[in-house]
Image 1: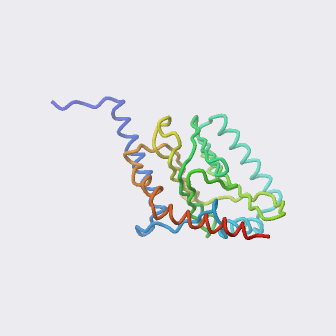
Image 2 (image 1 turned 30 degrees about the vertical axis):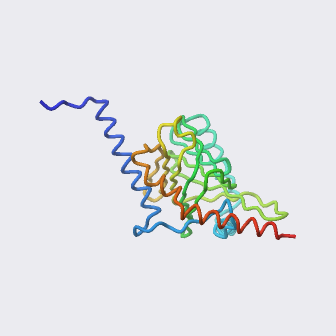
Image 3 (image 1 turned 180 degrees about the vertical axis):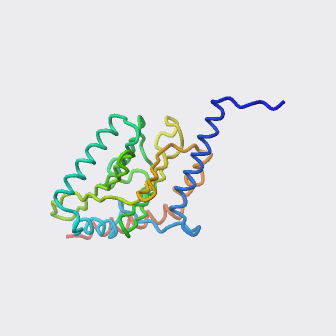
Length: 237
């Protein structure tokens, strides 16, 4: 006689299937037409696309002082909720290499991110230890997501740009994998379809992306851009 599954076993199977479905959905954002996207490397080299996003936000005619104040208020609320471990609030810190959601905080190692604002889309790769002055804030209740971006130039005191996002996706390898619930983390946000999620990903599911994040060709490209930018900095007067 076939053994019936317990409620707990059914719940576990349901969770694994949900995780697998969302993981595949997230992966598709980085493999359009089954081809890996061309990543930007904002933390180790000059990145005109991030500068472009910053300048587009500054030039946006709808980005009034009143709107910035409202957005800043929303961001502060999301930040407070995230650090009070309230469900439905996500804070990704590219400047610290961390993510906070629910009652979980995790360090992020190698990661890829997709950021879309209007018609502009950026695919970014961050190697373990890379830091960039940008943060993502997402709130499930209001269905809002923001990119807070600083673009540093020599002798510049420009204020941070607050960009309301249309889409954001993240796949990252966890630091201290033995101390968290999974090997990786996935984040998804799609304003149009009201699709928001964030969760750990078990190794058996995350393994292919883990291999991509440490792939020789990607590491080699990162290294070349890093070295080229260091030479450029050294040659500056």
